[in-house]
Image (cartoon, rainbow, N blue to C red; front, side, top):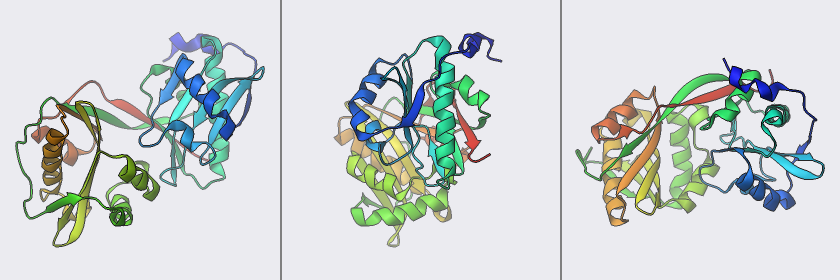
Length: 294
C-alpha cells in the first residue's frame, strides 16, 4: 500500500513531453543537479551521452525543463531507466513521471524492445512503477569486502591477462551465453567499459577465453562491475582466479575496500563472494520490469 503517496494523485497541469535534443544537454545537467526527485543508474557513460542515441525525453512547463527520462535499449531487447529527474512539487511529480514513462513505453514499442526495467534506490519512483503495472522480477544486493585479503587462488591452470580490444566481440558472445537478456552487457557496453575501466582482465584456459572481470577505481575504493564466466567453465575455479588476480591489482592501485552487486538468486556468485569475505551492506533493491507493447 502507498497511502503516504496519495497527495501525488491530485489533479495537476500536464507538461509537454518531447524527445531530448543535444542542445538540451546543459539544461538536463542543471535539472539533474537541482531536482528534488531523481534516479541515476548509469554504469559506463555520462547520462547526456545517450541523447540522440537512445530513448531520451524531456518535459517542459512554461518553456522550462522540469522533467527528464532516459531509457536506452542496451542490451537491445531490454531497456533500463538509466536516469530520471523531476523538478516540480510533490503533488505534480507523480503525474509528470507517469507522462514521461508512458511516452517512453510508446517509443520503445516501435524499437523491438521487449521489456523496460528499473532499479530505484529512492522510494519516490516506486508508486509510478506500480501504477503503470511494473512488477518486481528480481532483487539485487550490494556486497562489500573491507580488506584485500585473498583466501583462495582459484584455478591455477587459467591464465589471467589484460583484456585487449580484439577480445571484446568474444566477450559479448560470452555474456550472451552466461546471462539472460536483462543482465547482458552488449558489445557496445563492453567497448565503453574497455575504454573506461581501471582494471579489465580475461581468463584463458588452453588458449580459450572462459571469463573476464572489469572494475572501476575511485580513490581507495574499487567496484567490481562485472565478473562473467562461460557456463561451460563455471564451478571450475575460474571466477576465483579472476577475483584473486583483481584483488592483487587493487593493491597496486592503492585500493582498500571493494564493492560489487549481484542478484540474490545467483547462488554461484554469492558462494564465491562469501568465500572471499564479501558481506551485504544493506537490504536488497527490487528490480522492476514491465513488458513493452502490452
